[in-house]
Image 1 (cartoon, rainbow, N blue to C red):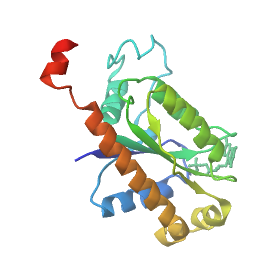
Image 2: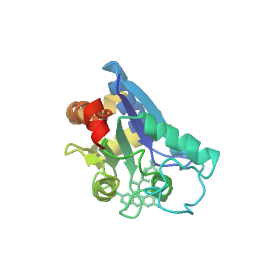
Image 3: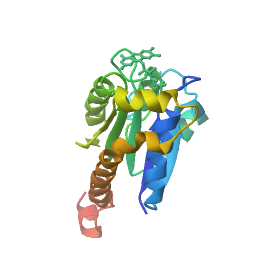
Image 4: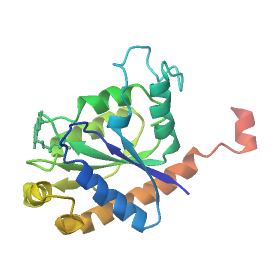
Length: 199
Ligand SMILES: Cc1cc2nc3c(=O)[nH]c(=O)nc-3n(C[C@H](O)[C@H](O)[C@H](O)COP(=O)(O)O)c2cc1C
């Protein structure tokens, strides 16, 4: 079975991100999908300092980077939960992403953002970065705008019902991501003996 990683990119103490994380993972698991939640709080990585991982695949400078790399490597697709700070995505996630390359390559990636414009600016930046990692950013995204964001954020606890207006958007994202996951997983399979012999 293919695995989808849901990446929480905010590490703020009072972050909203836990609520969309619950909503997204619930809907994925309801479909019986294999989900790994990768929380950047659990991956306290050093500032990137080294040669480009593009030329040194899976050579990890510290155990923490190796552990993060293992989680990213084991996933076939990603849904990035994009907190937007100053019209960009989080620095914590950029630093973490740059520690890797091969682990991301040729895999699909989707985005759920929130904020005054639904995290659209952070999501568009993430799409550009994903392309440089050799990924396939998919077209459908979920943008949590203030009409849903404010009630979902100010409620005392997580309430899936407060995201209901966006359920169909999330389902469309998951369906499209599943298509790309299937296509690209097959494409990454080792080449047949004949082709491998020619390499
Ligand atoms: C440093 C900082 C910068 C922010 N900049 C933006 C922004 O550019 N656009 C926006 O819509 N919201 C912005 N916000 C509000 C965030 O959307 C809001 O705090 C959201 O909850 C952040 O996600 P998080 O709680 O998961 O960290 C900013 C918040 C912080 C803390």
